[in-house]
Image: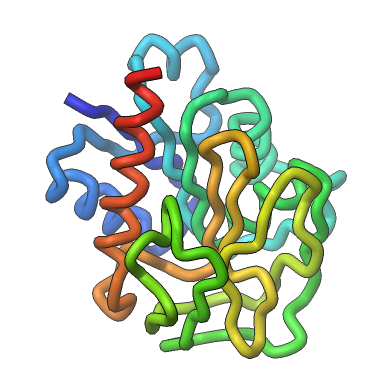
Length: 198
């Protein structure tokens, strides 16, 4: 059985991530980002999903509370990882990228253009509709990451590490308004299964 905890950073949709994973046959539950690394390892997770939330990460050197703890997990955990919404931004800043106030915040349905129809976005291109809810956005990807999707308003809708199984998406694949969100989770689970065999 595959085990993938969902790290909860006060996002209103985080419970839907757990539901999506359970419907795909995964053991999952919400987990506080303050969990000690030793306790997390004792759960023997196969991957992590970092949920969204309403906070801002524009000042990465001043992070407190859940976001500071989530940043610690992003840096320390060496498992496949999917970061959603604010933790997508947190992923970028944790690896040296830049998040700023969005020139045009996105709320509601947005057309996503797939730039790399492989791995986590396999079968989702050339475009799909996704649900967005963000005032900030990644404006410069970190070194070692590839931008794999964009929209007309946001240049980094999704990114993936060039060598590790780490991905970030600005949109919310867990809600029904995202037309191919379940497919994205299926792709992530396929990546997790590949990782377990190595």
